[in-house]
Length: 104
Image 1 (cartoon, rainbow, N blue to C red):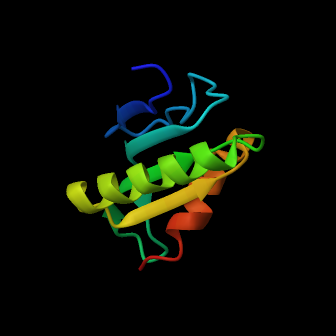
Image 2 (spheres, rainbow, N blue to C red):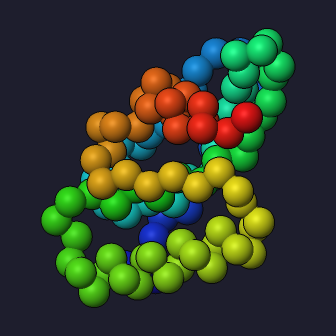
């Protein structure tokens, strides 16, 4: 339906980096992304990350609606690595690594 969030599922389990936003969304977007993460101690994990991109300029009513949808999706899918950004240009590999470094 018109006005509903896009659901982009990007599953990436190989060595090279896949651009998170090859679609260049300029609207609210939900992304579920598996990323090869190498920890400081050399361990490798593939965390399933949920990223909510909500660009500046969205109407407050829509922000609230999408925030509620986001919470239901995160709970239903039992996602534990949840990140949010207001600037789609932030979504780089470095951004993701810095957010994942919080988890051990």
